[in-house]
Image (cartoon, rainbow, N blue to C red; front, side):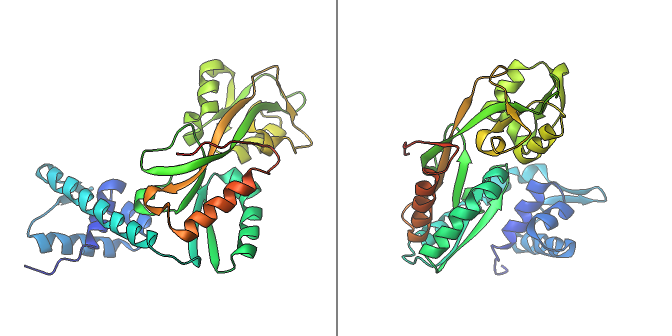
Length: 288
């Protein structure tokens, strides 16, 4: 039997999960030929084809579904080993990847990171800005700062504060609302909007509160925004007549396997302490 390169497994799973070789190559940051070569090497190592390969793309063979599930189990175990090994590191040096929303990454976290760097000069913080949730089981980030009502069972964290949301509009904006799209549609405020405002009263929208603020300032409609994003606007006015103020817990946490890692624990503690004093957020204190 050939020597098995388990790293090839990443390429096989990327093809399955991204739907094509080209999409897998973009996801992995490699070229098209590399993905094909790695998939072929994996198939040769195990002595059988995984995909039906045609001009329309790679389709997993129906009888290979059990193999796919076993591969995912292997990948999960590999990432678990890596997390546990990293969790045993006692150093306060190195990179900590912090994932958060675009609003927090632009308006709040850079100043917090600057003070963290001044305190621990051997730490390097990388901010990942996205309104979608990253996959912590695959170590796409080390720490999250996210508004959510609850954490997944493999995450641990503290409700550092709560985000306050309200309706805002520019003068003479009319009665049309801006929709919350993408991941924002499934948020607490997105659910309120869908339940309360009829579809015929929506006029455009966005998947970013930063963009929604700009749209509202341009008079395109009424926007639901975090108060720390909108209260500083010289154009927007809060509209308590249109909706009640809503609060969503703001969690700072990480994967449970990382809870004792010094550099990650120090980063979490610093961010939690800083958020408690940030204007526009309400201090919380629950821990899971």
